Amino acid sequence: MMYLKNKIFTMKTRIYILVQVVMFCGLVSFAQQTPAPKQIQAVTIMNATAHIGNGEVIENSIIMFENGKISFIGDATTVKIEAKGEIINAAGKHVYPGIIAPNSTLGLVEIGAVRQTNDDGEIGGVIPHVRGLIAYNSESQVVESMRPNGVLIGQITPRDGVVAGTSSIVQFDAWNWEDAVIKEDDGIHLNWPNSVTRGRWWMGEDPGYKANDKYKERIATIEQVFKTAKAYLAGSRSEKDLQFEAMAGLFDKSQKLYVNVSGEREILDAIAFKKEYDVDMVVIGGYDAHKVADQLKANNIPVLLKRVHTTPQRDDEDYDLPYKLAKMLVDKGVLVALQNAGQMERANARNLPFQAGQTMSTGLTAEQALMLITSNPAKILGIDDRLGTLEKGKDATLFISEGNALDMRTNQLTRAFIEGRDISLETHQTTLAKRYSDKYEGQKKEK
Image: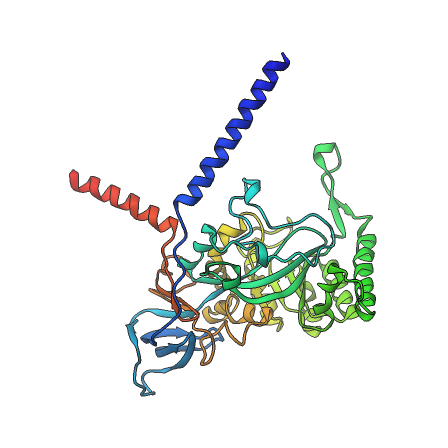
């Protein structure tokens, strides 16, 4: 009997290994496109509608970039300038700044169901020294699939733990993480506790909500971490503590504290925490942020809003509340951007432009909606000196679309550039699409 059990176990193990090998080979069989070389000649885009990203639009534009930077942008009907280098006639098309995906695990997980490809968390509760950047896989096929929709930049963020680790900002066409990095170690991410819990129905508990008895205790734990870090950093630091060394940027304001928090009470407690420890804070999620918008505005706290394409959390809320949260906060003067954390977040990150488009249904203009994924996240992440808008001196990270980039029916990219480099828009998905399109076209001709 024991022999039979061991044999069955051995067979299962072999099958498991075989499945892993097959899946790995499947990944390798579709290699990522080779990163584009450095820009060597000027590029001039003529006659397109340019969406600057700050609310302005130039209907008939001329955009010129050299050495990876925008050297000129203006109205072609009023400004006379000699075109340089490659001339792209984009009449009838639209030019946009590269879309930014904040608070993302892109490049940290390739296949969610395969544990060996998951690198978005580390063991431990307080791990600010864990850096998402060094685990970033620039060869990820999921990352590559962002580019055909215009998503060209992301904030790569670890997830696990109370203090989850340090994020960095990258561009999505690189040989490795060193090539990809735009801003290294931009901030530390904190998972704020919930003041309520739900009963575990699978253990016979009432599935309803109840007060979390450990809420204050968990906040006290976070406060103790920050108090100890401040005391350590104010001392001699002769014996290095990697955890507290990693937090130094929070107190000298070179880094931001990104707080995952959604409830009204929790946001107010987080605001009080910001005041106590004098840190630059960004709220991530912020489902109830509209209820405390005045306090967020008064304390200069921006919000990376919960995914737009979702359903209300409570039975008594408007069905379209997730759609209109952005406008409610914008109307209150809060700096808002969109992020995509949640179920299947990596694959869904390519839909950020369409989530922005959804906010137009509840009152934002097209250009205000565009700001939620371009200039606003650039400001929040501290990269607006380089990215987020089409302006002279900024990185030539932009794309040309056949139509409105916020509409999935018309956002058909013809060209895209990262730092002036003409990047590929091919992916394993476009390869498969062409393969089967050719197959069925061939069958039609045979008939």
